Structures are given as C-alpha cells and as structure tokens.
Image (cartoon, rainbow, N blue to C red; front, side):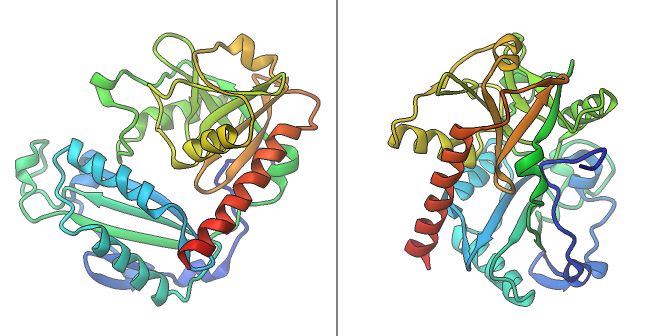
Amino acid sequence: MTDHQTTHDADEDIRNRDIRIFLNGDIVHRDDARVSVYDSGFMLGDGIWEGMRLYDGVWAFFDEHMDRFFGSCKAISLEVGMDRAGIAEAMRQTARANGMTGDVHCRLMLTRGIKDKPFQHPALSTSGPTLVIIMEHSRPVNRLQSAGIRLASVPQVRGLPHSQDPKLNSHSKLNCIIACLQAEAAGADEALMLDPHGFVNTTNACNFFIVRAGEVWTSTGDYCMNGVTRQKVIDLCRANGIPIHEKNYSLYEAYSADEAFLTGTFGAQTPVASIDGKPIGDGSRPVTAQIQALYKALIAQHVKDNA
C-alpha cells in the first residue's frame, strides 16, 4: 500500500494526456482549455459542479445528478443557460470526441462567468456563465477494496445550512480541503468530519456509513452532501431487508463498528480500514460486500434500461 491514498485514486491512463474538453460550446484539447483569471469560479469559487460516471455508454443516474445540479444552481441564482437536454447533448459530444464509452468520470462545472472587475458582487459577472466538461478515462485502483481507506477525525466540521449549506456541490471547497490537510497531517488518507453538534457526519470527499450488528448506519444527512450513491445505498438496503438508519451517532460508535465504508460516484463503495488508527472490525466486511454486489447489479440494470 502506498503511504497516502485517496478514494479517487485511479489507474494511470496515458489517453488522458490528450483528452478533449467542452468549454462554452467548443471542444478543445486539454492544453488549449483555458479560463480567464477574471472568471468568478477561479476568483471566488462561485460555481456549482457535478461528478458523473459512464458505464457502457450510459451516464449513471443522470436524472438524479441533474436534479441536484439544477437545484443547486437555482439556490445560488446561477443561470445554467441550457436545459437538461442541452447538458446531456454537451456530454454526448464530449464523450464522442474522446471515443469514450465506459470507465469514464465526468466533472461538469458551471461558474457565474467572467467578472468585469475583481470583486465579489455577482452583478459584476455580466458575460454569462462558464460551462466546462472534463471527462477522463478513469478506473478505481483495486488495492482500496482489500486494504481499505484510513480515516482520521479532524477539528474542521461541516457547517450549518445558514453559513454555507453543505448540500451545495459548490466550487467553494476550502472547508473540505482544510479537513483533508488535517487528516494528512495525522497520517491518514482522508478526514472524517463531524457535524456542528459533534456527531459523525461525512468525510472530506465522500459519504460515510458504518455497520453494527448487521445494521447499516449513516448520518441524518442534515450537514453533508446528499450524495446520489449515498441515496442508492439507502434505497438498496431498504429494498433488500438490510436494516438502515439515518441517525446521529458518535465517534464511540464508529470506532467499535464491525464495518465502515464510504460512498461516492467515483469509487461506489470503498471499505474503511481504520479510524484514528483504530482498526474497524476484523476485515471480513460481509455487509459491505453484499451492498457492493447489490449496487453493481443496480448499475447493470440501469444501463440495460437506458441503453
């Protein structure tokens, strides 16, 4: 195992050196995909993004991702400039330009656009939004499934909805970056973040679950990104007789869990090896394996239904 790993570690693919990127209606080589230093995303982190995954020509759970994307844009009064069909077509064009059909990760990014002056007020963004679609050939590394990810609880917390709502998939990720740095300083791979009341919440990059006596627990969802994969896991548990609870719980209960795993669009379900240096369970992870198999079957059915 490497000294440091993340839930977004992927096998190196040299094809990514020559990918084509969608930039405001044009598809250009990655070396030519440039955004102004006056862009509100670069200058202020003023933007919304989505991460999606391509399986056999089908973008997994596209509608759910678009629900979140358009909902987030509405929440911050960010005009998208196109409808869902327009986004889908832009993604099709980008995938086609790269000859991509599977094992692909997409980062869709929308900012408030270029500002007239380097100041905060949204009214200074008069040129319209900046839309970027980056697609990379990306297959998660296998070692994480056996080794698991190492977490450290950190002092940085996920904030209250009236400060900066964690449900927003915004370009303003400094809160999570600080948490990641704190975890790295503690010798871990990722940060386990608490909510403002001290209950276990999420990691800096993924949603977090534990398994205790055959029951799956996750946070209430009040202070974390309500991930699409997170919801799919909750739904799968409910549909397959696996007890699932969205509840407050503490580090005490996380430390003594039988299993723990993370969920995200890129890695699906990633096992957790330890929290604050304390090994989680005995490494057998039967419930995690069951959920992984159910999710894999769900993806296969989704692809079949949408091919």
